[in-house]
Image (tube, rainbow, N blue to C red; front, top):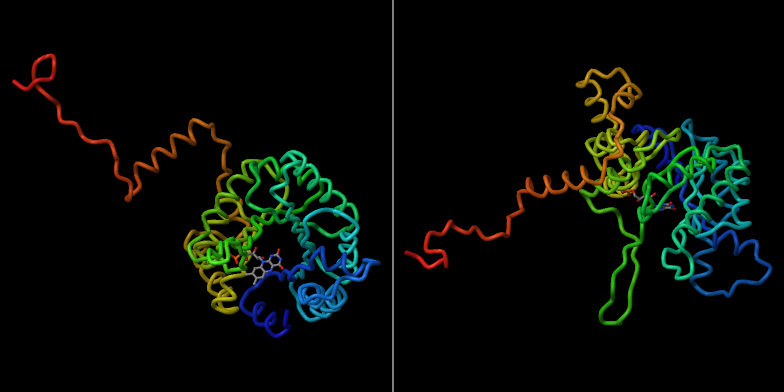
Length: 316
Ligand SMILES: Cc1cc2nc3c(=O)[nH]c(=O)nc-3n(C[C@H](O)[C@H](O)[C@H](O)COP(=O)(O)O)c2cc1C
């Protein structure tokens, strides 16, 4: 993360900076007694984002340079000693920690309930080890975001980030094999993020929620906030359009607040409706109503003209 880039992001209105993650494998590799095999992959992995030591040094440096909160980020797939790194991030001066634990979602011997409980225990242990506010970044594959939000709040999380980004799966048909690519979020894809906000917010939660995924323009930010976000995070659009993307979002949001007569963002957020936990029946009625409204939808049922004839259907 280059200081000049950060300076521009902040000048354009960024309210906080999340550092790129340091990965479980990198910390475990550093702490392991067994020498790691020297392949291109392991070297690349060890040096990603500078590796653990440089990560902390950069965090300290950036913290000295910028006035906005700086958030460290840990990315792994399970709990363990590597999470002690949270204390080092705290000692380096971070204002908060983002915890991105992405469990393996295809473990034949682990039920979803076990996976969720393990995640909550991991979050609890990290929250107990640092005084920093901890935000948990979740994958959107949890069946019940509302219940996860409540459990994570009880485990000590101060915030949620909905949702984590996934590498995109593909299949290389000529190699008969699958591939994964790290791609920017496609345009026009804020819907899943909005749905996540609404699902999490059916709780009366005492934690803040950050929307991450598909925020490109002020309109996306406003939608996410009406649906329940306290803050929005922007990554792909900054890669596409540079730090000025932040200015456009901030300016558009200010115009919206002004035209709506809101004195502050907080006032706007307090006046948003709390999503209700809707009964299954109502949700289904909504689905059918929106299907019927949809412009592309054509009722496939053939129209049968009323027939006249004798009681066997023969025309007169
Ligand atoms: C180039 C790039 C690098 C990223 N690095 C990380 C990372 O280190 N840790 C993490 O949790 N998410 C990472 N993400 C995911 C983003 O934080 C964010 O969740 C995701 O891109 C969705 O937001 P967007 O639609 O604004 O891009 C990265 C995304 C991109 C595009």
